[in-house]
Image (cartoon, rainbow, N blue to C red):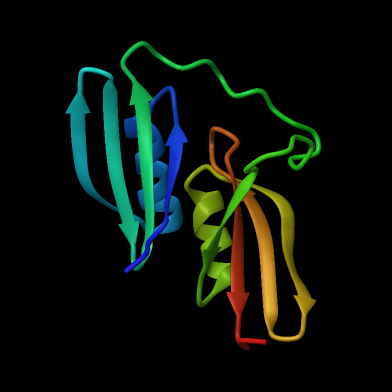
Length: 130
C-alpha cells in the first residue's frame, strides 16, 4: 500500500486542525507531542494531513500573488462528491475562495480555497474518470 500525507507547518496547530475538522471534514486522529513540536494527524477517508507546530515557533507565511507565483508545492487537491457543499463549509469555517467553483471540463468542477493561513486547496469533483 502507498499513501501520501500532506504536511503543513503552522504557528497554531490547534486552530488550524480545528479549521480542517470543521471546514474540510477531517477527523483529528492523534495529537503527538515531541520536544521538537506538536503534530496533529488528521484523516478524511484516504486523505491524510499532518499539521506541525514547531516548539521554537514558525515564521508567518509570505503571501504570493498570484497564489501560484512561486515554484514548488503550492497546493493540494481534495477530491469530493459535492464541491459546492465543500466550498461552502470551508468558507463557513474561515477559509477564503481564491477561484470560484467552475466547470472546467465536462463532468468536472473545481474551486481553489485557502485555509486561514493561506494554504491553497483545490476542491475537485469529478463525475467521470476520463
